[in-house]
Length: 281
Image 1 (spheres, helix red, strand yellow):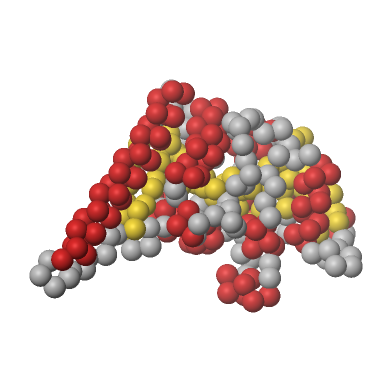
Image 2 (cartoon, one colour):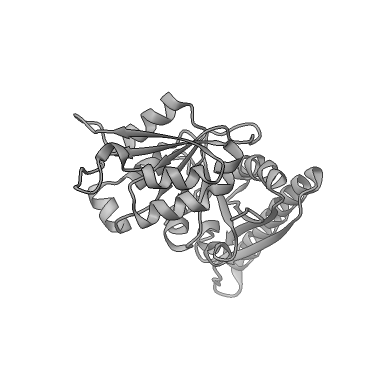
């Protein structure tokens, strides 16, 4: 796999610069073509008796919507032009105005989707349903922390959270271009079961061997949860200790409803992301 077509989800002017600061240098390194996508909420058409001011109010909303589309498109085009990266713009209007939801169909035809992790303190209009994007697009989604600043640099070390699931397998192979760029990958297992066929300490040995055949320097680490530490806590701690600058993990091994009710690693990492995180399902 190569990252030749990249979809950048631009929810608002507040996150556009951050997403492009990450996406454009990344695309330049990988020879990628960037699709910028932004959605605005459809103005609600209402009328007042005898024409009244409500009609004029809706006309004003429509003008504001078009102005935001224009500003977002200009920001996108300027960034790509400045760095010599090819791209195209897709602007939508939808009932929700959610760029992630509007981007699901486009996401299914690209190599990689890049979006910003939601800032919990941001205005609701500035947040996108990235969970739906991860769950429904069928493509890897690379999430940029809302605390990210500066320009993206080549990755140096990748942490692969491995549990042997379909989702983890898809994430591992979708992330191969980034793993090759880094050259170093740590395969992390947490609470892997001991079975007659495999010792828990070697639960990630097969995927490690496969990655090594791609010329990647691979190490393995097995962790056990204890006390109040969740799997998400262990992954976060290992990210800090290892110095990894990219996390790769499968997403939603259970349904989203199950994760919402019982908690889960995916939702926890979406809330408390410290490094760019590639999720696939």
